[in-house]
Amino acid sequence: MKRDRSTTQPREIPRFVPDEPFPFYSYVPGRFPHPTSDPAGHSFGAAPTHPSSLDPNHWETSRPYLYGVDLFNHGYYWEAHEVWEGLWHACGRAGLTGWFIKGLIKLAAAGVKAREGKYPEGVRSHAHRAKELFQQVARQLSPTQPRYMGLSLGELIGFAVEVNSRSEEAKGQPGTTAKVVFPFILFPYRENGVEHDHPQLRSSDTNS
Image 1: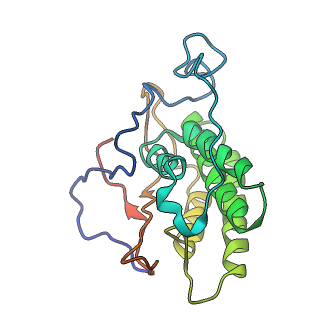
Image 2: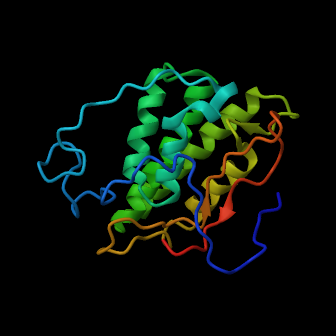
Image 3: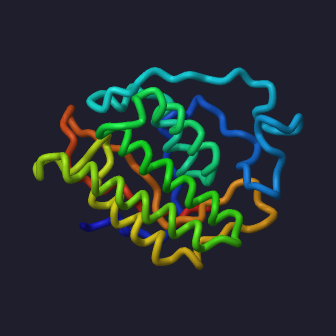
C-alpha cells in the first residue's frame, strides 16, 4: 500500500485532541519516576479515569482513543498504553474492538521496550502479538472494509512487521523526556462519513 513519503522535510505531527496536554515526561522504567506510585510522578495523586465503552462506528467521538493516538505519535508510549488499556477494559477485553485496542496496546508496549533500549526481544514479542491481533480483526471484516476505527489494518500489520524486523534500530535517547522511536505515526481518517482506504501511517520525519 502506498504511503505518504512525498516530502523529506520535517513536518509537525498532527494532534487529534489538541486541548489535552501531554505529561512533562514519558515514563521509561528505570529512568523516570513512576507516574502514579512515585510522589514525583507526572500523574501522582490524579484520580483514576474510567472511560466509557467505545463505539467503533463513532470512534472519532472518543477522546481517550484519539488522545492515545496523540500520545503514541509523540513518543509517550507508556501513557498511550495506559489510556488504551482503560478503553480495552471498558469494551470487555474481547471481540473486534477488544482485539483491535489490544493490538494498539501491544504497539505501545513495544515502544516502551524500545525506549528502554535494552530489550530488542521485548520489542519483537510485543510487535509480533500486535500483528496477530490486527490480523485477527482483519479476518472478521469484509474485504471491502479495509479500515477499522479510522486505521488501515493492512498498514497496521505492516507497521508491526517492520517494528519486529527493525527492533535493534528502535531505541530512544537516554536523556530525552519523550522520543518518537518508530518511523510512522497513526493517522485515523474518515471522509464524508465513510472510512476509505487512505494511508494513515505517515512518515514521522519530524522534529519531536
